Image 1 (cartoon, helix red, strand yellow):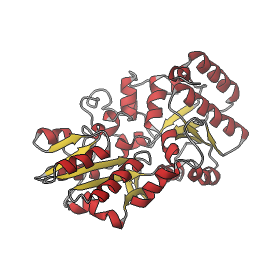
Image 2 (cartoon, helix red, strand yellow):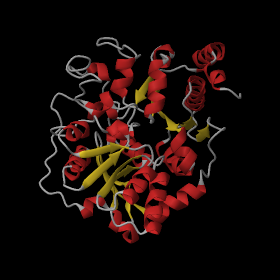
Image 3 (cartoon, helix red, strand yellow):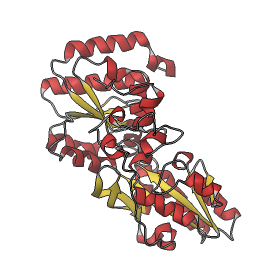
Image 4 (tube, helix red, strand yellow):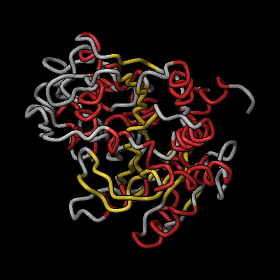
Length: 367
């Protein structure tokens, strides 16, 4: 295949679905760990076309959504400081904190700016030497290389007015945390192709072996996902538990070693809190000591944070796949993309936003 529309061919999709129905003999449960994959599954109705009883479980694959409330509250407290310019990707601005969001903070006078790359924030710091420029660095392994390069560039320039509020998380520890839960129903995973394009898939092999779960590295188009599901079901039916790569056009087992080297040079592994999963050992990244001067959490000590989730929001249960968005009493009424109670409804990769955009209503659950 050469063109994008070839990965959306309805005739090929029907053949894959037919093959899936012929192959599946049991109601398997498969989790995708990528918000982009969730949006494709829901937007295209793939989750509703699967064989009877088979279910996709939508996992903690939205980096904005799993960012803990404390990080958001800390970002807003830093943004409120005089002389601070807080920069962020646009999808973080409307994510609710305990009392407000970054967009509202900007309306009240905080200097909050949208950037498209972390290097934009570095350039802003160069151009505003009398201001403190802070970049809100969230995301999975996918965004870590670019953030590492921004820190390396700031160090080369000797910038004293640039820092990052780091809240990076790593996918494999979240998968093991889910599998270690006695209530876990996941029997196979679709791994995120963009994460694996950076990291490869070697770190998934011990998970597949220990927990006896197939893991298929999968792309983001409809045919990618259907083929990934079929590959996972074939493994399940045969009693195999291996890591396979559906996304061969973009992913190698070793990943992008240059990107990995950049990440390792700037960051080290640490414990990290996840919305929905809590504190997970070894599940995040923090700046190494040689680059600690770029750590905004150290530079701007913020005390007295008492994060409080909205009591109506079931974001944590949605992120772990325990509940569907349509199970939430506030879904589509008190919680909408215009007025979200939680991150999964506002983020471009959030499960609640995917369901709402697809017109999913209460009482109509995925099979």
